[in-house]
Length: 81
Image (cartoon, rainbow, N blue to C red; front, top):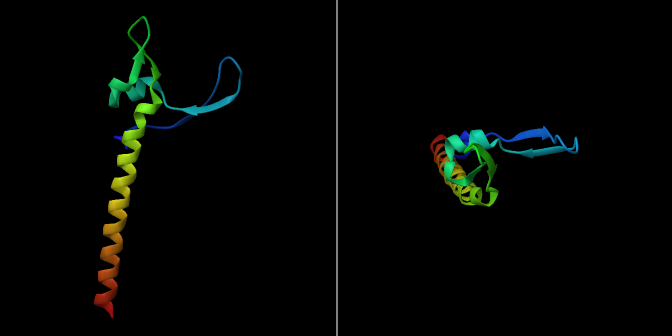
């Protein structure tokens, strides 16, 4: 899920200051329940706190993959000795 999202750097229209975030329209395609809609029912804002569980699960998945790859490397090293 997280891999379907793309972080962006953009310049604020009001302050001309650079910011970072996600595009509500893009997030709406992946996680519509965390995107607020404006009066025209178009994606308007993102509830960033609602992304936290997805980020935690992504980290856990990467940790599991890393542990498995380390296990495979360890076994290969034993085989080569």
